[in-house]
Image (cartoon, rainbow, N blue to C red; front, side, top):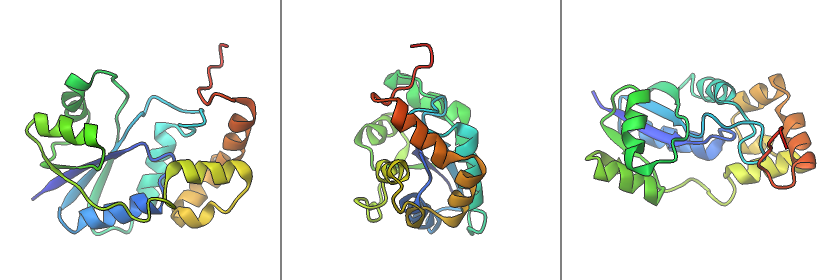
Length: 177
Protein backbone atom coordinates (compact mmCIF):
# COMPACT_ATOMS: atom_id res chain seq x y z
CA UNK A 1 0.00 0.00 0.00
CA UNK A 2 1.30 3.44 -0.94
CA UNK A 3 0.15 6.64 0.74
CA UNK A 4 0.89 10.03 -0.79
CA UNK A 5 0.94 13.53 0.63
CA UNK A 6 -0.24 16.62 -1.27
CA UNK A 7 -0.12 20.04 0.35
CA UNK A 8 -1.76 23.31 -0.62
CA UNK A 9 -3.59 26.20 0.96
CA UNK A 10 -6.80 25.35 -0.92
CA UNK A 11 -8.18 28.90 -0.64
CA UNK A 12 -10.53 27.61 -2.02
CA UNK A 13 -10.21 24.03 -3.31
CA UNK A 14 -10.63 24.42 -7.09
CA UNK A 15 -10.76 22.29 -10.25
CA UNK A 16 -6.97 22.43 -10.64
CA UNK A 17 -6.58 20.85 -7.21
CA UNK A 18 -9.24 18.29 -8.07
CA UNK A 19 -7.44 17.34 -11.31
CA UNK A 20 -4.16 16.98 -9.39
CA UNK A 21 -5.80 14.68 -6.82
CA UNK A 22 -7.24 12.57 -9.65
CA UNK A 23 -3.77 12.21 -11.21
CA UNK A 24 -2.14 11.39 -7.88
CA UNK A 25 -4.90 8.87 -7.16
CA UNK A 26 -3.78 6.84 -10.19
CA UNK A 27 -0.40 6.22 -8.52
CA UNK A 28 -1.28 5.60 -4.87
CA UNK A 29 -3.78 3.84 -2.62
CA UNK A 30 -4.40 6.60 -0.07
CA UNK A 31 -3.79 10.35 -0.02
CA UNK A 32 -3.14 12.77 2.80
CA UNK A 33 -4.24 16.25 1.74
CA UNK A 34 -2.27 18.71 3.84
CA UNK A 35 -4.10 21.99 4.37
CA UNK A 36 -1.30 24.53 4.57
CA UNK A 37 -1.53 27.80 6.48
CA UNK A 38 -4.25 26.17 8.58
CA UNK A 39 -3.84 28.86 11.22
CA UNK A 40 -4.72 31.61 8.73
CA UNK A 41 -8.24 32.82 7.90
CA UNK A 42 -10.36 35.88 7.20
CA UNK A 43 -7.74 37.64 5.06
CA UNK A 44 -7.70 38.37 1.34
CA UNK A 45 -5.04 35.71 0.75
CA UNK A 46 -6.47 33.18 3.23
CA UNK A 47 -10.19 33.85 3.62
CA UNK A 48 -11.30 30.40 4.79
CA UNK A 49 -10.67 28.55 8.04
CA UNK A 50 -9.02 25.14 8.17
CA UNK A 51 -12.38 23.59 9.08
CA UNK A 52 -14.08 25.19 6.08
CA UNK A 53 -11.33 23.92 3.78
CA UNK A 54 -11.67 20.44 5.28
CA UNK A 55 -15.38 20.58 4.38
CA UNK A 56 -14.59 21.69 0.80
CA UNK A 57 -12.00 18.96 0.27
CA UNK A 58 -13.97 16.18 1.94
CA UNK A 59 -17.15 16.93 0.00
CA UNK A 60 -15.33 17.47 -3.31
CA UNK A 61 -13.44 14.16 -3.01
CA UNK A 62 -16.21 11.97 -1.55
CA UNK A 63 -16.65 10.03 -4.81
CA UNK A 64 -12.95 9.44 -5.45
CA UNK A 65 -11.64 5.88 -5.66
CA UNK A 66 -8.76 6.77 -3.34
CA UNK A 67 -9.08 7.11 0.43
CA UNK A 68 -8.27 10.69 1.44
CA UNK A 69 -7.44 12.30 4.75
CA UNK A 70 -7.61 16.09 5.04
CA UNK A 71 -5.14 17.26 7.69
CA UNK A 72 -4.61 20.87 8.80
CA UNK A 73 -0.97 22.00 8.86
CA UNK A 74 -0.28 25.27 10.66
CA UNK A 75 2.48 27.57 9.45
CA UNK A 76 5.72 27.00 11.30
CA UNK A 77 7.96 29.61 9.63
CA UNK A 78 11.04 27.43 10.24
CA UNK A 79 11.90 25.61 7.05
CA UNK A 80 14.60 23.41 8.60
CA UNK A 81 12.02 21.58 10.75
CA UNK A 82 8.97 21.94 8.50
CA UNK A 83 8.95 18.35 7.18
CA UNK A 84 9.09 16.85 10.68
CA UNK A 85 6.24 19.20 11.64
CA UNK A 86 4.20 17.94 8.67
CA UNK A 87 4.98 14.34 9.56
CA UNK A 88 3.90 14.90 13.16
CA UNK A 89 0.53 16.27 12.01
CA UNK A 90 -0.38 13.64 9.42
CA UNK A 91 -0.63 9.91 8.85
CA UNK A 92 2.59 8.28 7.66
CA UNK A 93 3.15 8.77 3.93
CA UNK A 94 5.57 7.32 1.38
CA UNK A 95 5.75 9.99 -1.29
CA UNK A 96 5.11 13.72 -1.42
CA UNK A 97 3.56 15.54 -4.37
CA UNK A 98 4.44 19.16 -5.00
CA UNK A 99 5.47 21.58 -7.72
CA UNK A 100 6.75 24.15 -5.23
CA UNK A 101 10.57 24.21 -5.45
CA UNK A 102 11.06 24.91 -1.73
CA UNK A 103 8.62 22.20 -0.66
CA UNK A 104 10.31 19.72 -3.02
CA UNK A 105 13.72 20.63 -1.63
CA UNK A 106 12.62 20.27 2.00
CA UNK A 107 11.06 16.83 1.42
CA UNK A 108 14.08 15.66 -0.59
CA UNK A 109 16.49 16.79 2.15
CA UNK A 110 14.40 14.76 4.61
CA UNK A 111 14.81 11.66 2.40
CA UNK A 112 11.22 11.57 1.14
CA UNK A 113 10.51 10.77 -2.49
CA UNK A 114 8.96 13.74 -4.30
CA UNK A 115 6.91 13.51 -7.45
CA UNK A 116 5.81 16.43 -9.57
CA UNK A 117 2.82 16.61 -11.89
CA UNK A 118 1.98 19.17 -14.52
CA UNK A 119 -0.48 21.71 -13.19
CA UNK A 120 -3.91 21.58 -14.74
CA UNK A 121 -4.76 24.79 -16.66
CA UNK A 122 -2.80 26.82 -14.06
CA UNK A 123 -3.56 30.21 -15.63
CA UNK A 124 -7.27 29.61 -15.08
CA UNK A 125 -7.37 27.36 -12.03
CA UNK A 126 -5.53 29.36 -9.42
CA UNK A 127 -6.77 30.38 -5.98
CA UNK A 128 -5.93 34.04 -6.59
CA UNK A 129 -8.08 34.04 -9.73
CA UNK A 130 -10.99 32.34 -7.97
CA UNK A 131 -10.86 34.79 -5.05
CA UNK A 132 -10.60 37.77 -7.42
CA UNK A 133 -13.65 36.63 -9.36
CA UNK A 134 -15.59 36.14 -6.12
CA UNK A 135 -14.57 39.60 -4.92
CA UNK A 136 -15.65 41.28 -8.17
CA UNK A 137 -18.81 39.28 -8.76
CA UNK A 138 -17.37 37.36 -11.71
CA UNK A 139 -17.95 33.74 -12.72
CA UNK A 140 -16.07 31.76 -10.08
CA UNK A 141 -18.45 28.80 -9.85
CA UNK A 142 -17.08 27.25 -13.05
CA UNK A 143 -13.60 27.12 -11.47
CA UNK A 144 -14.51 25.00 -8.43
CA UNK A 145 -16.26 21.65 -7.90
CA UNK A 146 -20.01 21.86 -7.20
CA UNK A 147 -19.38 20.72 -3.62
CA UNK A 148 -17.19 23.79 -3.03
CA UNK A 149 -19.93 26.08 -4.36
CA UNK A 150 -22.27 24.47 -1.82
CA UNK A 151 -19.81 24.95 1.05
CA UNK A 152 -19.22 28.60 0.13
CA UNK A 153 -22.97 29.16 0.08
CA UNK A 154 -23.31 27.47 3.48
CA UNK A 155 -20.58 29.59 5.11
CA UNK A 156 -21.50 32.82 3.28
CA UNK A 157 -18.02 32.76 1.76
CA UNK A 158 -18.81 35.10 -1.13
CA UNK A 159 -19.94 37.85 1.22
CA UNK A 160 -16.90 37.26 3.44
CA UNK A 161 -14.46 37.69 0.56
CA UNK A 162 -16.29 40.74 -0.73
CA UNK A 163 -16.25 42.35 2.72
CA UNK A 164 -12.60 41.51 3.37
CA UNK A 165 -11.45 42.87 0.01
CA UNK A 166 -13.52 46.04 0.42
CA UNK A 167 -12.22 46.79 3.92
CA UNK A 168 -8.69 45.44 3.86
CA UNK A 169 -6.45 47.12 1.33
CA UNK A 170 -3.28 45.27 2.36
CA UNK A 171 -4.85 41.80 2.55
CA UNK A 172 -3.47 40.97 5.96
CA UNK A 173 -6.55 41.66 8.06
CA UNK A 174 -5.47 42.43 11.61
CA UNK A 175 -8.60 43.15 13.67
CA UNK A 176 -6.56 44.86 16.40
CA UNK A 177 -5.29 47.59 14.07
